[in-house]
Image (tube, rainbow, N blue to C red; front, side, top):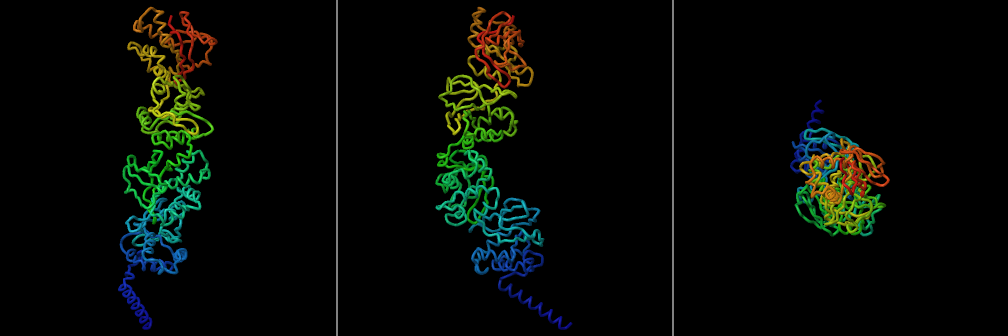
Amino acid sequence: MKNLFKISLLAFLMIFATACSDDDNGDTTPVTEDTIAVFVQNNPDYSSLLAALERAGLVETLNGSTEYTVFAPNNDAFAAFLNDNGFASLDDVPVDLLTNVLLNHVVNGTNNSGDLSTGYINSLATFGTTDFNLSLFVDTSSGVRVNNVASVTTPDVAVSNGVIHAVDTVIGIPTIVTQATANPDFSILVEALIAATDANTDYVALLSGSTSSPFTVFAPTNDAFANLLATLGVASLDDIPQNVLQLVLNYHVIAGANVRAGDLSEGLTATTFQGEDITISLANGPQIIDATGMPSNIIVTDVQTGNGVVHAIDKVILPQAVIDIIDPTIAGLAMMTADLSTLAEALQITGLDAALNDRSAEFTVFAPGNAAFDAFLSDNGFANLGEVPVDVLTQVILNHALTGTNLSTSLSTSYDNTLATFGTSDDNLSIYINTDSGVTLNGVSNVVTPDVTAANGVVHIVDAVIGLPTVVTFAVADPTFETLVAALTRPDQPDFVSVLSTANGTSPAPFTVFAPTNAAFGDLLVELGIGSLDDIDTATLTATLNTHVIPEANVRAEDLVDGPVSTLGDDITIDATNGTITDQNGRVSTIIVVNVQAANGVVHAIDTVLLPQ
């Protein structure tokens, strides 16, 4: 017993002396049990980590009351780190580098594995001489993986000042490429960097190194690249010429600057690695304006690495040099033109982007600008495009498209057919084009920028959305029916405009309207021996107008059959073979224009006013 006591006392004195000696040398600080530092000191599998902490002077940091989360590499991990980086031992690692590497394993606060989610967190490591903390990408899709290099092997080791997660690899100082490869949402970007590499430029090596660093990289997501491929009408990156891909990638990199979100300001311009400028806009959140004028939203900011910073964006930005090379489709033009961003969104919602991206077909599209869509949504009580029923939005967009390529010089005052249809039929809606002064569509929308050519047709930018027309729309739009409109809107008449604007499917719609031209009304005045419409009494005018409307039917020219037909007024008699209508007075009117198709009925122009008995 005496010998045992002597041995124990001797051991205690030796430990005490060693502790005092260590404290005097400033190598370690006496620690209390259960801290992160104590756990490392007491675990032989972390002797390399302990030695590294002591050399970096970080033992005291991890021995205090402040809570941390530590991803702790074991001895094997440190051995691999030293070997991979050409160091014989920890003593060969520069202290400043070793310190930052160790801090790159430490996160503020206690983050148990259940608290972690896929995304970015900041370590205590910093960029250069700044206080910008480096980012860690944590992937929890299968266990916990950090920066795609280290996996948590033992999670949630609770200690008094935080938590320790054992990892199987030292988490080195990340580069731009580290973060690109770590985040699966940048997988196509990584493919692009590899595909664009040639004998002159190795993008992976460049963005992993220090030459020309630091870098600011605006990194398009996979969805952004998918949209680019759709815009270009190609299936994969392999279909993009390497020189074009290089121009695109270079446009996303600013060399020699670590531009963080706090450095961005409205109107700021920066020259990219490609040589062209980009412009920053903050009006609608942080955005980048490229050569197309189309904004790209910065959706993730300040992913800080050791050789620069990454910001994720939702659209691949394009320099003028690329725009000059590629031949975009109509859908591509919408995606590339700033003032058509709402149209581009509408095309994606409705799935019509695929049709307008088809290079085997040709279209003419009257493309509303963003302000036009804003007015359309406001007028119809919608807060955004997402609130518009998809079937309605689809028909509205189709109502702006014609088949074939129609340059402004080939347009004339006339009716044409859009790709929108009546109800569930295949009958295309009509559009009234008036070229008397510029180009006006259905009397509501004017072409402000004509003849923007595309690979599969032409785009004319317009100042208003062309809503689905009613029979009233065409009566008002076509000056041939000015007298008819005057009659319908005479103050003593019923509210014909409201009735004839009734939506399809609601009684008494749909309508078949036989619309007398101005000349027909002029002939009527001569026939009756009167000077103007004002000379026709109220009841007679009402009965006359009612006689031109068949309710509850959309009777197109091909549907006309011989015989009597009931209208809102008197019956009329159809001669389908000769295309005539006879009223109760035996007067014959000829149908001179057929099938002006509206969304709530069809209009046929006639040359004689039909009179009730």
